[in-house]
Image (cartoon, rainbow, N blue to C red; front, top):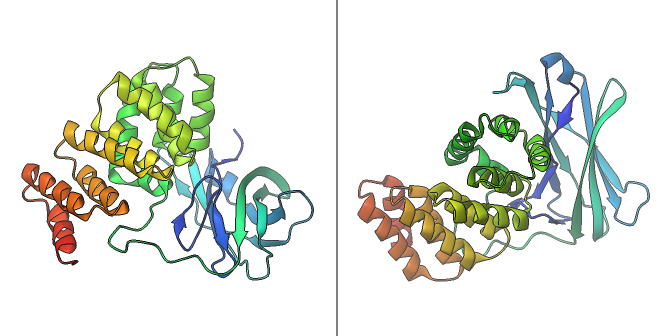
Length: 305
């Protein structure tokens, strides 16, 4: 019945960052979370700030007031509101910190969310391998067409099961509630339940838990989208070769899955296997000869000598 929020997702100029992210003093730190309520009126009076505190404790070294977006209705019949932060780090000494978001309404704190951050001096190094695509945050992957399709299919299968509520919360994008609901349904180990558990962990950037749960789901049921998102979870964990293996499985299970062929090509580029990346795209075009995405990506790679 009360206001709740998602996890705090933090980043920098590089976009999405891992479970224990790094930020650079010249780039600053950005953060986002979502607040949820039963009605629009619950979310109108919100205020929020982001504080950076030394990991060993003590007063905040810097803070910033959040920008609150307009309240929007959500698919579950309630309301949501995005809360974004842009925190300069120019005067922050390098070291380990806790980023703490404090959300209040009418003078009372309704939620606090924290993430550990390592602050480094200078600017972030340039991204290697300019032929590869930019880093994409898991939450953005979840909001994409394939993410929404996968979530909807799991939620449909979750109906009339103990994790039906978790499925509904996933469709609404309330990932903290999904995590809590799946904890309450810990005895549910069907492929659909493991897929939902793994996808929720992936969005939370808990890649170790995500890969374990999605692998269990894939072992129980061969599903191209499960393999596809398992690849992203491995990629987030820094295991490029495991990611490639999962994307190859996804492309094999569903040769018409354009995103699997593209991800596979980019995975090969990350390990400097340009010829294999080209081969992956050509294999995709064998199944989908009219795909403009695959054609464009192949032309781009073949133009790089």
